[in-house]
Length: 165
Image (cartoon, rainbow, N blue to C red; front, side):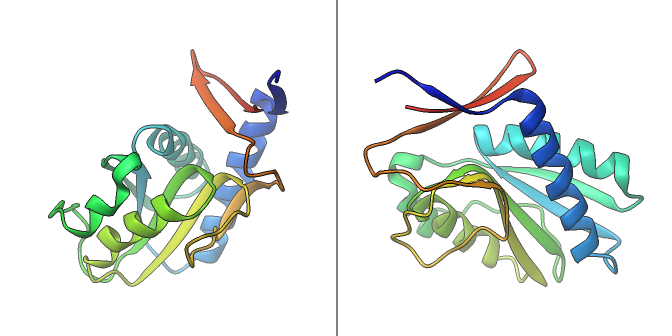
């Protein structure tokens, strides 16, 4: 089956802009916000999100990377990865695609070990195939697909695209 384009570069930039404005609006009383990108593509998305946030707001945005094996994301429950997140801060957890929720759920476990004030989730594309009780607080696009479909987000050469395969 041939890949079908879902989002073009300009559409992805628009989605990132809109999400940045929503984050700022929802956190008006926060002087600093921690943005945690799930490696690899979630972190790339988080980098661009922070760039847009810094252009739009005077707040301080800290960018952190959370790395783990997505094929074995349950390792998040037992590893002792510590992120540099001070107590009582707002954390925005970022990934490219939300499918079953497993990756975001396990990554949330790592974040919640840090006594945060509030945690929200961002995804570029929400597929709505939940197996875990987590949702995207901010989503660029919500898309109903079959379980057999695969969504690929590419961040190559500063040209962003999303395709359905």
